[in-house]
View 1 (cartoon, one colour):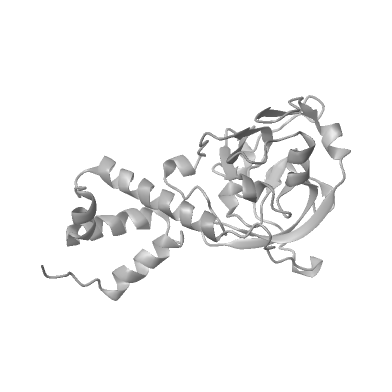
View 2 (cartoon, one colour):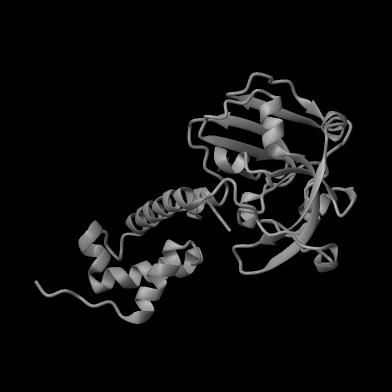
Length: 256
């Protein structure tokens, strides 16, 4: 049987997709083109006119990328840090809605719910969270849309918090639910990474609404969509939790 040669442009797209660098619309268009070449059609049996089949294939490729990224992830390797002189001012707002739609969370009545595979399930007030030992980091936020910005975040190392509440550190996932309707989840090794931070301040001040008041998870080893804002609930589980963008085809691991 004669083997079909892949042209350099198509090969480049395959590499970019494997690295999680190709945006979803571009990836969908590429896969349709690949199917017409007969390559992916032969491997998967999907039809170029079958949108659910294309989406199913995209999800399988995305989940494969997740496994490769998780295998490559080094829980001890630190993301770069920067001097204060390199902070991006103003630090950009980003969300799946306009800035004027950011939720206003009442500081007095706020409670952080903790559930799942943890020993201590009491709900944390903002005052309790602020009383915990804090640290700071100046790290780069990398957005899947292609831009980045450097910011200064302060808060509690998330691994310390998980140990404090008696989380099962052998569990697979930690999930987050937010006041703006957003939700996402991360793997336990990322949750325990020394730079994964429960951010309560930005640039030395109380965390502004536009950056996620009262609580943002800052993960410099992940792309921006894996850094939830306005966090209201945390849960530890062995059941795959998905996420707002991940359920629409974005890579779940989302490493930067």
